[in-house]
Image (cartoon, rainbow, N blue to C red; front, side, top):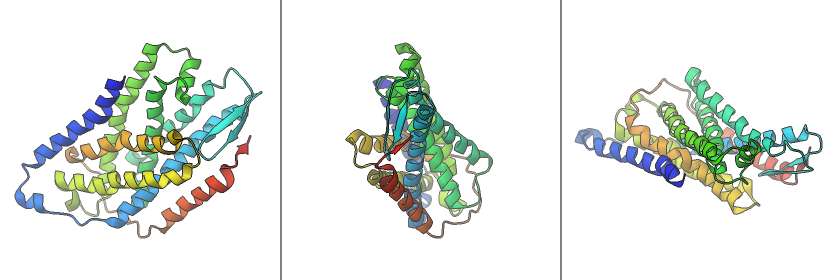
Length: 298
């Protein structure tokens, strides 16, 4: 499983990215020297929405971990800003450890299909949908991979409820690893469609540079922005989960930029101000630490 994970999340995107780099050498010198202006506001906006989407999806996951337990006789769950716990015992408790991942996966897929059907006319709305799709899918799929080898993981507990054999767990993890690049590569054209004009993404080098500014760099910044939402807590919960979430999909998004040939581009209403996204992110931070951090008993 370790080899398959490295192949899917490291070797695969690296190989695709290097292929694009080698092919870009065939671009004419004039085209290669062209540099579209860097849209710093879009990078900042994307970073804020990345962090906002991460926290909304994580909160949604915890809600769907808590609610089924709250409706089960004998279980008394408590919801926190970065986790949950429960008192009591019931045979279904371990099964309900998988409901959170299932819920956010369905939400992520809903946004994937929403982008395909009705992507919207504003850059802010499209970015929000892209990052909700990203986090919904990848926060869930990574848990399937981890759960296949760690029975203490939420999805691992649900797998044990069904008494899945090791080969079945491995098969589930391999399916998750196969789906990850499919979704990431599907999101790449949607990100490229945020370009102010088709000329900014009219060859491989420009597309790779644009994706770095609208997705890769925002994922790095957004991961740092997420950390204050998760403290205090175990380092795995505070740092490792956000880092893995960024690493799982962004490599494929960046690596696939060069080979996208069809972009659903149309003029979008620009994100004129970063303040709405900033205010929303601060509001969630206050909610997490003033309301959820002490714990809400169900």
